[in-house]
Image (cartoon, rainbow, N blue to C red; front, top):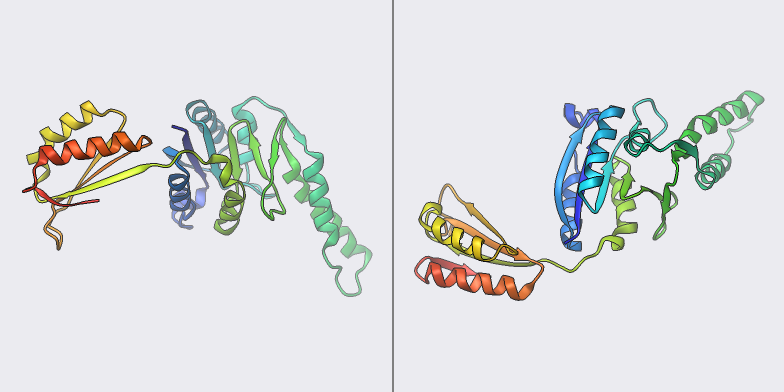
Length: 259
């Protein structure tokens, strides 16, 4: 099963000034693609912390995604952190530089522009060209109608923190990560969790390739169930077998419904 990790970068997330909506979006997307998201880290705009976290995630998971810290301002240090994670030098990517130059040169000139206005335009371009400085060996991933490519350094995919752009960029490359889908079965039971723990232990031990989840409620639901049991995995036949055996051991008196 392909695995993934997500690193959310930004002091604004840790301080609560900005709500993180990229994480739930990516959780849903990776789930639909059949990838297992194993770990999420939320860290500050600190280069050494980014480098350490990226290096650790990259060694553990098949694909790593970062969110935030990409841009021309002082706190945009994700790219440098990724370079440090792999001990790679920074270099100006000619294709990125060309894209940025073409974009800023295409901006409409102010009415009655002067030499001072043109100088300001050149200064703006020079400042924003730092976004063309990337770790050596960076791949540019394109897809759909993306104007700006996704930066990929080894197995690390660098995405911006702005939710609209994060989503647009991920959706443009999402099919690169498609795996076989998860199969999910669900059983709702009337019993308290403690009453059925021994049954769950037995099924979990006998089906290590099937993830068995148990989610109790403080109060019974409208249909009187107290615990929601889920069984999921990549092998549909194994999931179905585990579900059938679990239902058999629980007995019909405990089961409210199955799906």
